[in-house]
Each structure stands twice: as structure tokens, then as C-alpha cells.
Image (cartoon, rainbow, N blue to C red; front, side, top):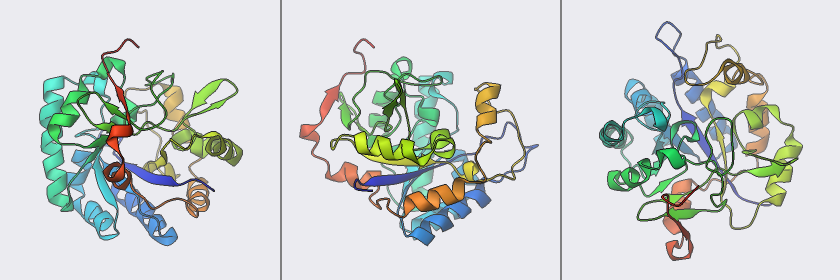
Length: 278
């Protein structure tokens, strides 16, 4: 692998109710152990209510040298939230996560990349809340959430934060986020290699995964806010995820997104007005 690829992990609890076993702590610790095995430093985006339930997991990640970011107060897509409630809960979750981690929380990631043109109201809120960067948009059309037409390289929202868009590549006419999630679990390695080879030197590449993707023993349940097909896909390929990620991480970068954001020359970034027509 000739290009640096930062590693990110989204720690969340997607259970529809407490009737299902909470396996988030156990599986997050499993992934943290994998990161320690391959000696990689990651950016860990944590949902606020999970951090409050399992603060020991956050402290373990901090002790291992990982950067801590916020993945919202709860794992609810932005379009289902009220802006005022979102800002209040985001402030509270950020302060709580900083208290638990003992480090500033500078990065934000929206659940399911749900920062879109319709939810652009969240962009000034990120700035007011004190974040310096976001990695919350998929710059392509997508069955769930996408913002087609945005730059693939890092850019700066007008009067707001730096954005690190999810890396995408064109395969047979489709722009796909090839470095993480179901695309990582289910697609052959040639897709990742092709995407990396085709990527621009101006892009910031990052892979993303979730603790539940490493858990083939978790009982099936219907995910909220998505269809049955997407829910079924979330259980496919879990048995092979650990070995796939272990092999991939052998050559991954230990530079966190926060590291990159702190060193980037913002005067060279494209400014994007979220109010521009989409």
C-alpha cells in the first residue's frame, strides 16, 4: 500500500430495545485489541450514550493512544432530529465525552453519514459546539444518505469546520465508499486496491468499521430507520471481518484524523457553501 490510510472506528449500539444483549463493550474491546496487535492508532468515534454506559472502554482506548471523537448523542440520523434538541444534546455529549476521555473532542461524525443537503442545518451547530473537523458526508449518490457533487478531498464548510469526506471510487459507473462498512466486508480486495490506486493525492483516505461487524454470534434484529435488506446485509460477512481487517491494517497509517486536521493548511482548502444548490 503506497498511500496513507487513517483508521476510524464507530462505536455504537444499534439494538432496537434492551430485550437484546448489549454486546457493544465486548466487541469494542475486541477491536481495540486488534488495533493493539497490529500497532495502529485510530480515531474512535463514540456515541454519547454508549460512552456513558461503558466509560471503561473509552479509557482503554485513550490509554492505547487513540483519538476520541463524537458520533452524536444517540445513533439517530440527523433528518429525524430537531436542530435545537440536536445542538443541546451535542453540547452535553461532547462535554461528557471530554470528561470521560480526559482529552479534547475535536472530531464529529454524523450517524450513517446522514449529513446531507437536507440536514445542512447541522453544519453551523458543529462550529458553535467547538468541533474543528467533521467526517460526516458521503460525496456521492447513495440509497441511504449522500451529498452528490461535494469534493472528494478535504474542504472547509463556509464559516464552519473542516470536512473529511468519505473516500469513494467509481466502479462500473457507481461511486461507492470502498474503504469501509459492508463494502469492506463483502467486496473482494481488488475493489479496495483499485480505489486506492485511483485516488487523488489530494484526498485523505480513511477506513471505517464498527464493533458489531466483528460479531458473527450476535442474534439478528431489524435495524431502525433502514429497510429489511440493509439490516440483512449488516449480518453478512462478519465471520471473515477480523482477518480481513487484520491483513488490511498491516499497512495502514497511524495518523489520526485529528492529527491531519491540526496540520492542514486551511488557506489551501476549498470553501463550500452548504446553501449552494445541490
